[in-house]
Length: 176
Image 1 (cartoon, rainbow, N blue to C red):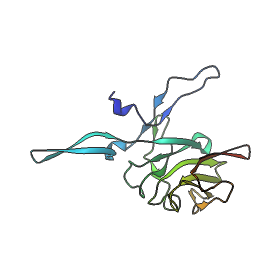
Image 2 (cartoon, rainbow, N blue to C red):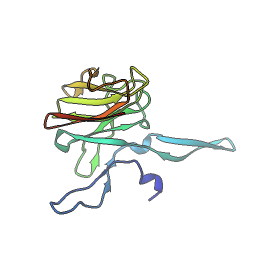
Image 3 (tube, rainbow, N blue to C red):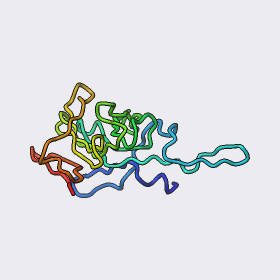
Image 4 (cartoon, rainbow, N blue to C red):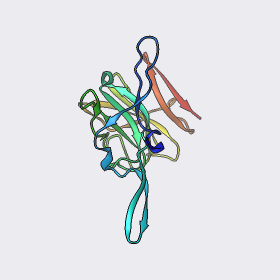
């Protein structure tokens, strides 16, 4: 396995009640047809892709493990910068090609740190309205999300605010 295949991808590990299994890279269909973050070499009029790499970060699980949200700037079809994407299982071994969370969630700015609360509210971090990261939320709208709205204080300050999660109704976030 090449080193580029082992970094910044999505992996799973299963807990059997005593210990965790060895992490296994998720098989996601169709990612071989996307260019990813790579650079081209030109030699004697021929172009070559060198070391294509797709970076997927900050995953969160929703729909009882049947959907994984994550961040990537490297999948074809993004809205700009880093976007929120999701995958669902195709079968027991393979996940379907990533779906962009859409224009109600993603913008030309960087979106990151998706978190889904009870499959009803999506929280994200975005720089869509300022130079610093702010927290936004959207309500479920069928299988998609309403337009994200910037959260009020105390969730957003004049500093960087990001990565909100909610546990038993209590929000936790990171802020500078």
